[in-house]
Length: 275
Ligand SMILES: [Zn+2]
Picture 1: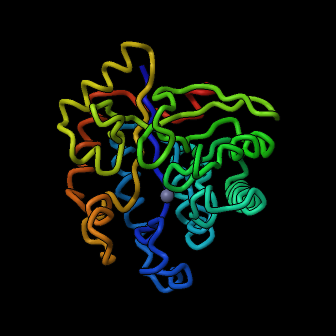
Picture 2: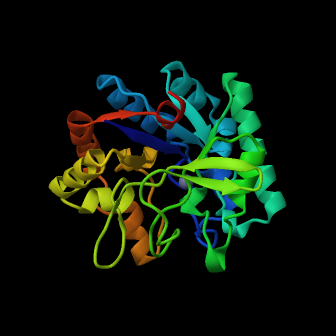
């Protein structure tokens, strides 16, 4: 059973909802650490001869075209993380489409290959108060075959969404949705395939959860960020909860991922979708 290995290619300062601490206009002055951290990830994946899907942020592709070249030359899949890293529910349909197509055509012009997958910043395709479910229809219309933007989580995402891959019908056709690995609990689903969940849960419980999914024929999806591999990145003065989400036990990620790569098989979303 092959599981899914994914990386959001963004820099250490691409954190949602911190415009009041670090405005977008200051991004240009921030030290870029993307190539340094990406190198570590690519070396690790190379050691295990594993291919992954990299959701590249258009802003990064433009500022650091070498990042796209490095990923592409190693034979990994390149998908889109949008351009400007703003949650989908904070954009109008027109703004979303513009951001989406800007990143898609930028990446395609660099690799010469069609981009077929998308992941929104902070799992921001939602329903209800933050409705942005309409984005799936725009993704189909723009030629995307799959999406990985809906987290079955309580505070961000759609709490009751399926936690294994599924198909969504839109008015322009179907799209396949790939949710992140979550850990069911009395408090609802908690993230486990990346971020703080991957760092906090015991390795045994994460491994057991993946084995459980694999036994029922479903892949587990892991999601990483280059800054997860960078204990020395510049720290932003974040509110307490966000500080923990971004920086807590950061050194654990690399150790956990290495063990998972040892214990399970992984591949790209494209391979699982179309072979
Ligand atoms: Zn992101």
